Amino acid sequence: MATTKRKSIDFQLDVEKYLLKMGTSIDEAMEEYSEVAAESFDIAEYYRQSQRRRPNVNSPSSLDCPKKMFFGRLGAPREQRIKAQGFLTMLIGYLLGIIFSQLAAAIYGGESEVTVEIPELGVYGHCDHFFMYAETGELILLEFKTLGKSTFEKTPDYYRMQTATYAHGLNADKAYLVVFWMDGRRFKTIPVDIEKWWQESKRRFELVEKHTHIGIPPAEGPSNPYFACASCAFFRTCKPKIDLLPKGGRYGRKG
Image (cartoon, rainbow, N blue to C red; front, side):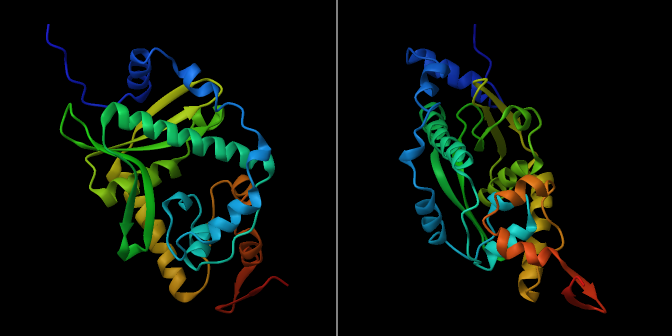
């Protein structure tokens, strides 16, 4: 009996099949990354290196907050805001992202960390994985995120925007946001409507570009300021600007 070709990606299923052939499982493959010694990482050094990354760009990873993109676009100084445990969680997610990209390359072929640029909007970033799907001949983009249970179950829309931005920049036929819940050892493969979410991303990029030219941060901030602002590298730069209110057509501080 001829096998039916799959027209969509199911990363969990494909990873399980691949690891089964390798004589292992997701649990075994992830075990060594479930505990990482905090002393292995230098938070201060991470922030020093982040200052040397390509400045003055609109980063798709900051789409959750136009204010954050605005200060990144201006090349504002970054500060250490993530506490040790949160930093460790972030790095574990980063390491797992590398593992997932390696698995994707082994299963589908293609390339990891593909550069995406949209010069007219100042956009610069790197998608996790990009390949031609042998089953359909389509160009497919994958973006990986390691999340907690609550965000795994209700994944924030700005991750869809980030994925759609990369897909638009690379002219992908399809894009998938692949989220991983560490404790549950579960993947969820979310098809992303590229055109729909790119339009929202574009709106935010255009907003940032407009405000960059006039030198005033946009009023629009993150959907959840409590969590987003607490760990934002531009907190001290941005916070005073939150208190700026229009007075007689000009901007001034409260009081």
